[in-house]
Length: 150
Image (cartoon, rainbow, N blue to C red; front, side, top):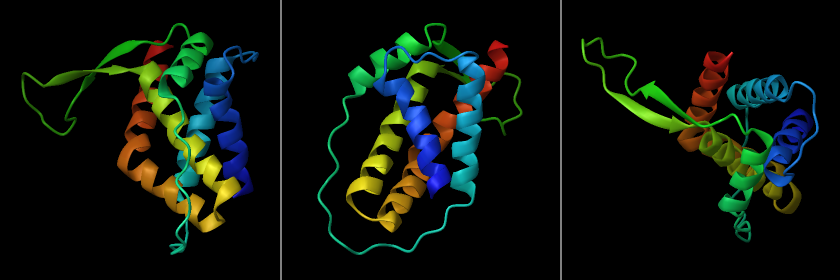
């Protein structure tokens, strides 16, 4: 749990602080994303039945502004919607690296809040649920975007 917390603290800084000063910022981001994904693949928890207060609403637009400030070269990209379809005319979609990172950070801020305000098991449950249902795809798409940008 301490490694997950450390990763969350570092990656959420890109959404909280508009001017993160790091050399090789994109390489650092890539390592953090891989670390978060690794933690997700090995997460274990027992469901906490306690009824806790709801987490605060983290302002998406403020987070997005800070992410944009930290990664001004990030933007739109094209992706294949179903990689398993082998057709002559594959269906493509448009993604947004800024939105991907903002959504990941917003989800991780909820996990971080739960680490501080509910229980370890509740926080791990939130982490696993948000990754499985939302952030995992953003994370994979963002890693691919970073790779293709090299």
